[in-house]
Length: 68
Image 1 (cartoon, one colour):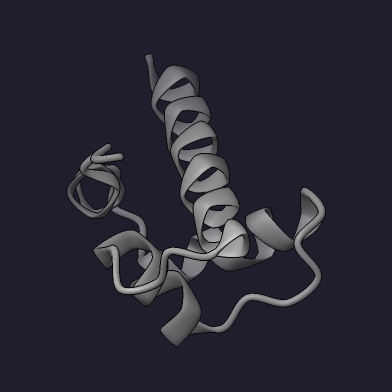
Image 2 (spheres, one colour; image 1 turned 90 degrees about the vertical axis):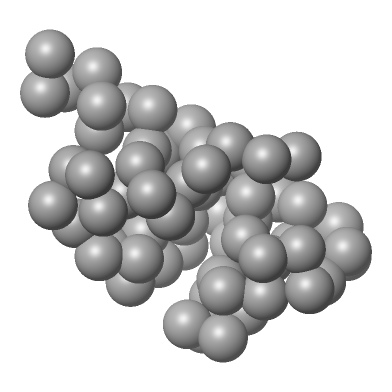
Protein backbone atom coordinates (compact mmCIF):
# COMPACT_ATOMS: atom_id res chain seq x y z
CA UNK A 1 0.00 0.00 0.00
CA UNK A 2 1.46 3.31 -1.05
CA UNK A 3 -0.40 6.31 0.29
CA UNK A 4 2.51 8.81 0.22
CA UNK A 5 1.78 9.43 3.87
CA UNK A 6 5.07 11.13 4.68
CA UNK A 7 4.81 13.74 1.95
CA UNK A 8 1.16 14.38 2.81
CA UNK A 9 2.02 14.88 6.49
CA UNK A 10 4.81 17.33 5.67
CA UNK A 11 2.59 19.20 3.19
CA UNK A 12 0.19 19.82 6.08
CA UNK A 13 3.00 21.34 8.14
CA UNK A 14 2.98 18.45 10.59
CA UNK A 15 5.61 15.96 11.70
CA UNK A 16 5.51 12.19 11.47
CA UNK A 17 5.56 11.92 15.24
CA UNK A 18 2.23 13.80 15.32
CA UNK A 19 0.70 10.57 14.03
CA UNK A 20 1.81 8.48 17.01
CA UNK A 21 -0.70 9.70 19.65
CA UNK A 22 -3.46 9.62 17.04
CA UNK A 23 -2.67 6.01 16.11
CA UNK A 24 -2.45 5.00 19.77
CA UNK A 25 -5.80 6.66 20.47
CA UNK A 26 -7.36 4.45 17.81
CA UNK A 27 -6.42 1.21 19.46
CA UNK A 28 -2.78 0.33 18.85
CA UNK A 29 -1.33 0.30 22.34
CA UNK A 30 2.19 1.60 21.69
CA UNK A 31 3.88 2.82 18.55
CA UNK A 32 7.49 3.98 18.56
CA UNK A 33 9.01 6.36 16.03
CA UNK A 34 11.04 3.46 14.62
CA UNK A 35 7.95 1.25 14.30
CA UNK A 36 6.04 3.99 12.50
CA UNK A 37 8.93 4.62 10.14
CA UNK A 38 9.46 0.91 9.40
CA UNK A 39 5.75 0.38 8.77
CA UNK A 40 5.47 3.35 6.40
CA UNK A 41 8.67 2.40 4.57
CA UNK A 42 7.52 -1.19 4.13
CA UNK A 43 10.29 -2.53 6.36
CA UNK A 44 7.78 -4.42 8.46
CA UNK A 45 5.09 -6.61 6.98
CA UNK A 46 3.34 -7.63 10.19
CA UNK A 47 -0.38 -7.27 10.92
CA UNK A 48 0.44 -4.45 13.36
CA UNK A 49 2.48 -2.64 10.69
CA UNK A 50 -0.35 -2.97 8.20
CA UNK A 51 -2.76 -1.57 10.77
CA UNK A 52 -0.39 1.34 11.45
CA UNK A 53 -0.29 2.19 7.73
CA UNK A 54 -4.07 1.96 7.40
CA UNK A 55 -4.68 4.16 10.45
CA UNK A 56 -2.02 6.66 9.41
CA UNK A 57 -3.68 7.02 6.02
CA UNK A 58 -7.10 7.54 7.65
CA UNK A 59 -5.70 10.14 10.05
CA UNK A 60 -3.88 12.11 7.34
CA UNK A 61 -7.00 12.03 5.16
CA UNK A 62 -9.00 13.48 8.07
CA UNK A 63 -6.38 16.19 8.58
CA UNK A 64 -6.54 17.07 4.87
CA UNK A 65 -10.34 17.26 4.93
CA UNK A 66 -10.36 19.48 8.02
CA UNK A 67 -8.20 22.05 6.21
CA UNK A 68 -10.45 22.33 3.16
